[in-house]
Image (cartoon, rainbow, N blue to C red):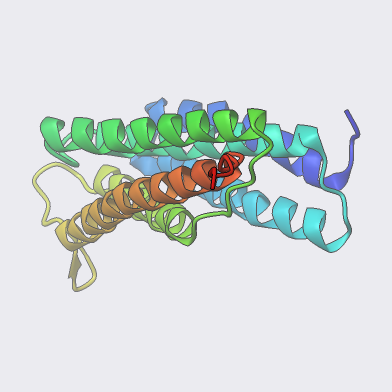
Length: 214
C-alpha cells in the first residue's frame, strides 16, 4: 500500500468513526459531547471530498484507495444515520428501521453488481443519483445531530426553543432530508441496475450467424 495523502485522509475518516460514536453516546452534560461529535463528523465528511479531489488532481489514485474509500464512506455515513435515527424521540422506530434497511441493502446490492462487473472487466459509470443521495444523507445526519445536541442543552420542562426557532422544526427538517436521501438511494439503485444490465448485455460476444445455404 502506498501512503499518499488521499489514502491517509481515507484512513483518518475510518478512525474518526468510533470517535464520533463514543462522543455521541457519552453522557456529557449540556450536549457538549454531541456537538463535538458533530464537529468531528463534519470534518470526516470533508476528508471524503478532499481525498477524492487530491487523488484525481495529482494522479494519486490507487487500488487500496478505491477499496478503502468506499468502506470508510459507508462506515461513517451509516454509523451517523444509526446514531441520530435511534436517539430517543428523533424518529419512529419503524421509520428508522426502514431507512437504514433501504440504504444498507442498496449499498450491498451495488457492491455485488460492481464485483460481478469487475470480474467481467466491465466498467459501469458512476451514478449521479448516488452522489446526491450521499450529500442529502450526510446533511440530514448533521441536522439531526445538531437537533440532539440542542435538545440535550435544554432543561426539562423548558420551552423547546432556541431564540425564535422551535427545535422541533430542526428535527422535521433533518427527517425530511433523510427521507429524500432514502428515495434517492432507491432511484440510484434502479438506475445503476439498469446500466449494469445494459453493460452486461453489450459485453456478451455476438454470435456469428451461420451462412445460409443457397
